[in-house]
Image (cartoon, rainbow, N blue to C red; front, side, top):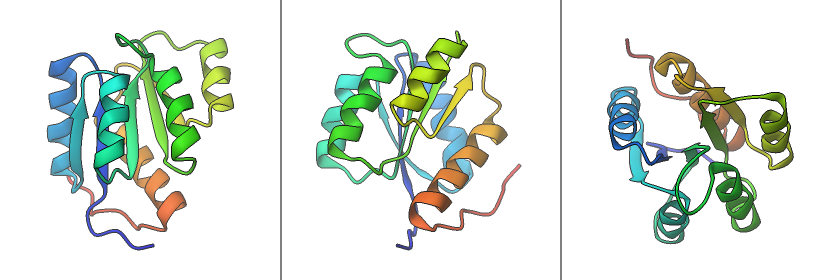
Length: 134
C-alpha cells in the first residue's frame, strides 16, 4: 500500500508539546492531527484516516497505554509510538505487551522521533518516507 502523505495523530495533554511536534513533523512531510487525550484520539480514529498514533503516557481520562490497548482492538495494525517522562522497565514491558511500535523517554529529539515514524510507516505500509529535512 503506497501512501502519498501519511497522517499522524499526535496525542498529548501538553498543548505546547503537541504544537511543537506538529510543526516539526509537518516540516518533515507528514500530515498531522492532534488530540488532547486518549478519549479524543479514539474519537478522531473513528472519523479520520490515521496511519500512525503518537501519544503521551500520562494524560487525563485515558493513559497512553490504555489508549493503545483500545486502539489495537479496533485497528490491530495501526502503529503506535508511546512517549513518557518516566520510562522504566515495567512500563517498557507493558508497552511491548500492548504492541506499541516504540517507546521513547521524554524529551524526545525530533530527528529520532521522525526516524521511528518513518520506520513504522515503512514496516507497516511499505512507505519509503519523505526526504529528510533539517
